[in-house]
Image 1: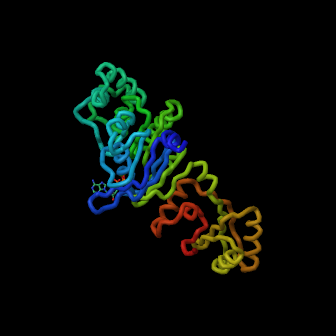
Image 2: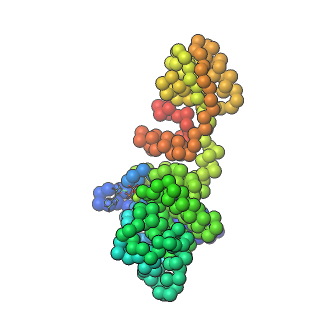
Image 3: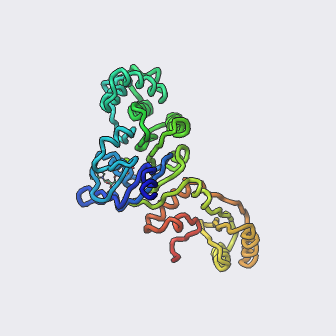
Length: 330
Ligand SMILES: Nc1ncnc2c1ncn2[C@@H]1O[C@H](COP(=O)(O)OP(=O)(O)OP(=O)(O)O)[C@@H](O)[C@H]1O
Ligand SMILES: [Mg+2]
């Protein structure tokens, strides 16, 4: 039973570590990632690209184990790469080639016969929106077109999994939207799994149903987006006139969690009664409440909040996601 469950996973990692000389880039990664669309989020230097390269068997892990579609990342890299489409973060294209030749060449490198690779190159270039530009040399391409061409190369052999390292990097709003919609279509209509990295929650939210957050080589959050949304606490933002400090103490003394931002404060909403508590706190503190609005942080806010808190120290996921946390309790 247990081994079946492991086989069903897209990716498993156990105590995975990667050192670059003395530098620890991946620190004890343990993950079970199911099929679907997964966003790997983290700031610059978090370890996202390193994690992808380890999964692809392009670099060796220092210790620990990992499996992709049941294959060992240490010994079956070649097999793994034949089942994965990889869109690297760096520019992997040959500027002197036309898009069609570049994409066909990627297929041939993966062992496809030239006719099949040519036919498929036409299809995937159309899929990524480069049908009319397919005979142009890549050196004439914009950043958006290059990203699309990289995606076409990754899709050439119709892989089961796509690994896209910052696919929206350098894209303007239109190109970004198109890239994200193409990835979404690959998951929803194509039934493929997609692993994509980004440092923007909005990107992964469009495509993915799960997120993994990495910070300094450690996994700090691994959840479905639905669960994250459910767990988010609403806050009531109030603006007070006079005695903000008294108001803050009064609210805290009633067990309410308060974040002070100058004259504005955000109070974690426990239930509808929180409104009454705020008004009676104001009466007791002798302050006037000038504005009271409910505020629901979006996922981008949560991500930034979590990353801010990690600047202090790594805490457990539940604590990280509690918006009312002030940083000095516990
Ligand atoms: N070849 C290398 N040699 C030495 N250190 C490296 C090497 N590659 C990455 N690192 C270091 O490992 C850490 C993780 O790097 P990695 O590129 O995986 O991060 P990332 O999350 O992809 O960042 P970014 O968002 O900037 O792409 C960083 O501190 C980086 O400087
Ligand atoms: Mg990277």
